[in-house]
Image 1: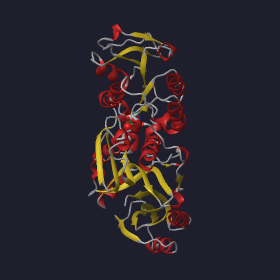
Image 2 (image 1 turned 120 degrees about the vertical axis):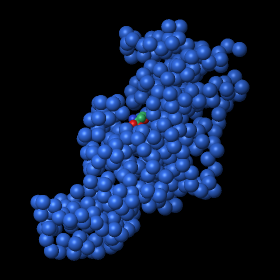
Image 3 (image 1 turned 60 degrees about the horizontal axis):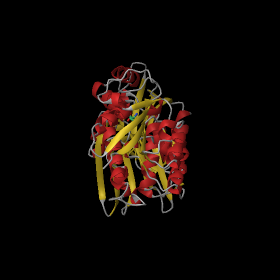
Image 4 (image 1 turned 90 degrees about the vertical axis):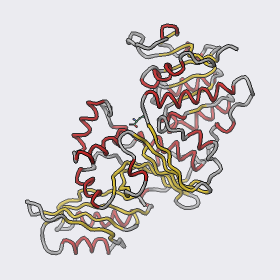
Length: 423
Ligand code: HSE
């Protein structure tokens, strides 16, 4: 039998891994590759036998190509490439989390209209199989919570900050030198990347379309070495957590922000660039999947897995992979972060004078907040003191009111940090 022909759009890190993995495959062959820069030197075995072009139309309008792999990322021109590929009879495999999070509904509709599938295992948590399991083996569970570490760059930075007692900027600069962080790290360190990924995961987990615009997002740029040390004294790690949970029967709470994670939880021990996804639901209970969240070969493994899944169905049936199609078009009703309840870690720099603890206690009691832990490690040379508090569960609105009272209190020099604590 003839091999199934594939068009590969993008030959960066992931594209190269995909090409190497599929080279000499006995079922499928990459027959054309589209790149941005034809003159770039590429030392990849077998590339000399493939037609390489800088015009996507060479793939889109090639009738022999049955599957298009899009690994260029970003909204444009990826959206157009995927749309036209589907309209020209191709199935699509993509790793494009931003596109799926922002335009998922639109491209899945186009795919359905044209009886084609879009698979995207590589878009979330690189090499960890999570998308396809959510659509198949896990789909009958009533999931109530997903808490995940979905960004390797930030997890690397936080792990290094902890291990070396180092500041954020110092570790970021090192991570950039070593290639663990991008030159422009905004998408990772400000939580955009994790927000795209949790939008995709929570849409599948709760079977309603989660809007990326309604996801509350905070990055790790304000996390200080002292916070990590203090959290450790209390028995916690600080992680950038992508959280999605059922809020009440009708609403979903989805957010990305740093959290203190108790050392007895598995997520606290996910270090460096490793990703992990914890899910709770019925009847399954609690599970966690962890592994490489990025990188040439782990990500290629997911892309190739999707390609082989589609290839095994082509020519066998008119409607391939019905369970893998995305049907979640009903919008999720999402709760605003101000409506949520959390525990908090609050670090305050106060004057060294009588009545400071009383002032803190007053701000909390006036706002129905109960304190669980409190720590002051002596007084600093400049006659100020850092006081760290962990609260019991309380309303975000009440915490914000307490913080603004404290900001205006004459005892308080400044609020150092306010970080949510995982339940
Ligand atoms: N930039 C991502 C990370 C990998 O740092 O995990 C690609 O999704």
